[in-house]
Length: 81
Image (cartoon, rainbow, N blue to C red; front, top):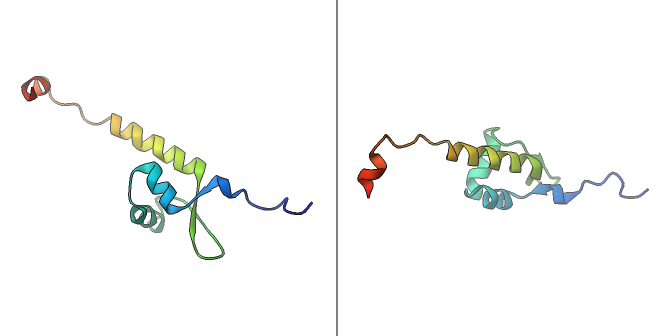
């Protein structure tokens, strides 16, 4: 069957799409890819593509990390008012 071996491109995101999902710049996404912090596939044209499931998992981890930020010391919130 023709095309049965084709990759579903909807499962992969461009650096700009990843950046938008994570709230960072495309340059940050590219740097993270070069550093091995975010896995990617390289297209035949030499462009990076990121698996949507991996990006979503990373987004969730980053969101959890942000919500687990160190709480303010007792009384600090009251003194800010």
